[in-house]
Amino acid sequence: MKLSGWGRFPVIETDLRAPRTEDDLRAALGQGALIARGNGRSYGDSAVSPRATLHMRHFNHMLAFDETTGQLVAEAGVLLGDVIDAFLPRGWFPMITPGTRLITLGGAIAADVHGKNHHKDGSFGTCVDWIDVMGPDGAVLRCSREDNADLFRYTLGGMGLTGIILRCAIRLRPVESAWIQQTTHPAPDLDTAMRLFEENQQVTYSVAWIDCLGRGAHLGRSLVMLGEHATVAELDAKRARHPLDAGHKPKLAVPLDFPGFALNSLTVRAFNKLYYTLGARKTGTQLVDWDTYFYPLDAVLKWNRIYGRRGFAQFQCVLPLETSRDGLTALLEAISDSGNASFLAVLKRFGPQDSAMSFPMEGYTLALDFPMKSGTLALLDRLDRITLNHDGRFYLAKDSRMSADTLRAADPRVRAFTEMRKDRNLSGHFASAQSERLSL
Image (tube, rainbow, N blue to C red; front, side):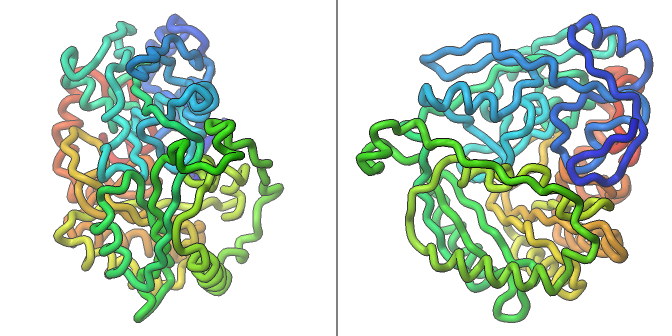
């Protein structure tokens, strides 16, 4: 069958299988290279193989929970949203979460996802105590910082290329309520946005929507949104009666693919201006529910249809602190000059991280999306070059078209990763369309 990531580009012909037991997985291992797939929310071709793709959603059981430490033991196919539904009413929330709750725990580990609190708490691996990984011989190894430590480090951010993630133990954070104290700061330009991030590093969560089509004095115009979990004392009387219940909002759905011309520089420029104006009116602090703060896009089902049948490409890089301002300026100027529209543009501040293959490093990360049309790939190649010129690197969970040479120029860790794969006899057993494109 034909399969793609969330960006719907590229589309790969694959043999999709849905194993239910570990014996099913072992049987599949003897039939050639394959890749495990969670809920299909990585954007490109990292969770689809030109040969066999294993749909892991049947491994979806929560196995144990420790009320004193917040440690949850669960299978890899459990969704982050399932964890929230089960444990937020009991006063627990994920320690690290990306911008969607519709990912599996196995996918969160494979991509070592990050959230709005990386500057304080690091990436998802921070909350992972151990991982059970099935290797090419069908044996299952428990990996942690103490046992099979190298495999543990490489599995975090290894994009499923170190084996099949079966189970994990993760730690949740205690919370008093299902509400977030959100403080919105309009930033008229990039310098102001970066200053706000630097001045608010003590705040748990920070993220900015950024207008990537701004020019001149408006280059980098942003809405910086800070957040803290609200305590019961900070809630009004009505909310305080049921502090861990924020209710459920109805979901919208995109019923069909938008026409290719719907997203263009004119429509996105108008949207960005309106979004900034409306956001600036909310300057100050207000209570918002957890779903609104962490997962605004999840409120719109099948939102990837907005980009039309040809899909879209995501681009996400991180630039080290010393080059961030100049690099972000160059990236934003290139996008604005191209007229290629990205209305889901996000800026975050990363803290320090030392890892084997995970994406984050201390600096600023910019995430963008572009509809696939004439000129898109050329623009992305230009953004690659700007990133390389400023010592940045790229997020494999968002990549769908980068070259192997670009990856190696950006990330010297790749050599050790590929050597580890060969030494452990992983290369011929675990492979995705992305890993073959990037020669991993």
